[in-house]
Amino acid sequence: MATGYKMPKDFLWGGAVAAHQLEGGWEAGGKGVSIADVMTAGRNGVPRKVTDGVKDGEVYPNHWGNDFYHRYPEDIKLFEEMGFKCFRTSIAWTRIFPNGDEAEPNEAGLKFYDDMFDDLLAHGIQPVITLSHFEIPYHLVKKYGGFSNRKMIDFFVHFAKTVFKRYKNKVKYWMTFNEINNQTAWSDPHPLLQNSGLELGKDDNWEQAMYQAAHYELVASALAVQAGHEINPDFQIGCMIAMCPIYPLTAKPQDIMMAERAMQKRYWFGDVHCRGEYPAWLPKYFDRKGFDMDITAADLATLKAGTVDYVGFSYYMSFVTKDQGDDPEYDFKEPDDFVENPYVEKSDWGWQIDPTGLRYAMNWMEDRWHLPQFIVENGFGAYDKKQADGSVHDDYRISYFRDHIKAMEEAVALDGVNLIGYTPWGCIDLVSASTGEMAKRYGFIYVDADDNGEGSFDRSKKDSFNWYKDVIASDGEKL
Ligand code: P53
Image (cartoon, rainbow, N blue to C red; front, side, top):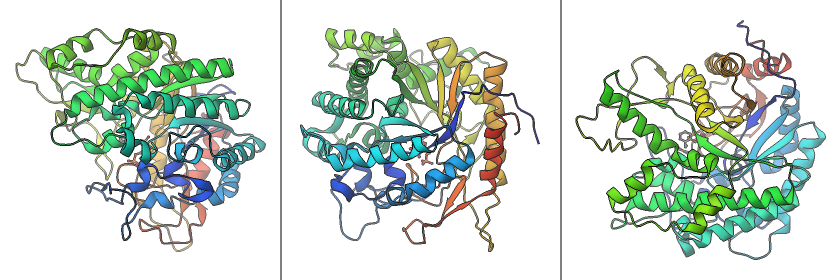
């Protein structure tokens, strides 16, 4: 057993999920159709399909998730048993505004979260809430083109204000847009739809569309931050960044410059969220590319006035850039310009395992953004094997967590990073965002369901359950 550093008593140990990946109940209580509801099941290496509406004969795993909608009281008891201080989930936008453009919210949807949050609080667990986690109402995609349309700012802010007011005495920690920077990989239609509700055609300029959508999201986020602070000055409202640090290929100076540009391209979203300003290189880039952006002076003032209170981020892996040749523009393009890192291992899904990268990233963000940090996702997706006696021996998951928690504690104890909490991803097995599989499991809690939604959906503890329970009970010392 390794010994870690003790974390402060008020450190928020917990777990993380997102509504569309575990709730199921996709039509329950008047819920509308979200983009996740029109995504079919993919597989490792096989992308999910997006259908034009919900079609007969297709498999839509988010329609049932892990059935948390009906089973959450049992799950919350298990979270309490592990010692969770907090539970990160999202509010499914389509439970509150089924189409997204209604004036009045859906009371049944609001009531579902009231009840669930009350149950969490009764078990000593505080909810940590993401407003938009890959769950844009499908109607907003079809009618308005998602975040290609400035009107989306109003729809999002209306949604945010509605839930801020309703849960102002139940939720303190909020985040606006989940992994807003995943769409850096703009040549892939999947993140464009998940992040921004964009469905683009052959003739569209996908890269410009990504920057424009992200701009509207950043303005919407800044308006939500301001509104939230008016509704309850104690709110802590963060951004949510997918942090995968990007390393240079070698010590060759051009490789260093390439990695710097790659980091700028992946993390400018955080610069705007945290500093309220576009970084210097980006307007130059827009000019060079000939992007005619709709960014007004009023928008820039809004961004400045709506900076976030903390940096929420996910951490799974790191990347490496390839040799850029002698191009002085360093036009890094994700993911084409990534190469494999020979110094690290990979998961079965090719995600590079790099605990030191977590400590590196925390230092990098501390130096750049000077804000408290909250690790709101970290974890290991793996094929688990349930034994005849019902046990799951997931020592590989324990080993991933041990190494990453150790790196996190070093960043706090040795480097002075101000860290609020740690919520491992998919603390209970749920549907994978990228592949739609149930087989890519992250949980401490096993859910008996397969990729087609067959199974009892019964819950059971994996070996990692008791391991994480001991970590929390020892304030992170017993790893
Ligand atoms: P899955 C890509 C890269 C890093 C994190 O991912 C990502 C993604 C998009 O899938 O997503 C986050 O389920 C996301 C969660 C997601 C989790 O990481 O693809 O915030 O919704 O489930 C793990 O293995």
